[in-house]
Image 1 (cartoon, protein in one colour):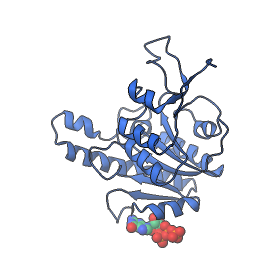
Image 2 (tube, helix red, strand yellow):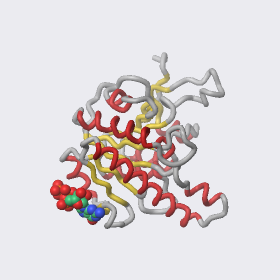
Image 3 (cartoon, rainbow, N blue to C red):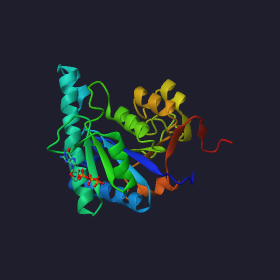
Length: 245
Ligand code: GTP
């Protein structure tokens, strides 16, 4: 895979930003991720970012502990805004131009989400960070990532996670688990491979946007995988396991 991507949406979970801590934001980790983004921008790729809020508040967990789901999701979306502002700050300290656009209006803090404006920002080399998910409860930040990637005509969703790709089974529990080079959207859904939730996968599939799953824990990995190097799995229309012809 040595395709030159024009516009990429990077999805990072909130948990990534907490580094080794159990919750909250680890400034060193945020700086490392920001530097990874900077490298990709400097390589001439337009980048937009969707971040989660699991390091601050998770709507689903709030709901399962008895909270009203909509309220819990609103809290999660506000958590995303905190993460987005933190990432914006780290990027701007490194000299990368950014704009935060929120799916829920909070004009004193950031721009509202305006599709055409977001595209103009990216054309000018700015990193657009989409905050507050889709702006609606009951939708995950993965779904927000697939939605914004579709709206922005991105040619890739880069999903930065803790693992270096998608396996046939949990590699920590099953030594026979094999890593996919490519796995189909349908297999991700039917085999419940937990790359992203079903709504996100379906949206990416319908809009023909491949999803690249890679580890964001290693410094410099984002640029590497975008260039087709290093370890990752691509979710697209076909399956391919390493070693298979
Ligand atoms: P250009 O049109 O390319 O110049 O983009 P720009 O974003 O620099 O233009 P604009 O003059 O609209 O914005 C200047 C600054 O104000 C940027 O940092 C924007 O992020 C910020 N800004 C623009 N609109 C809003 C808003 O509704 N709320 C907040 N909080 N900031 C805004």
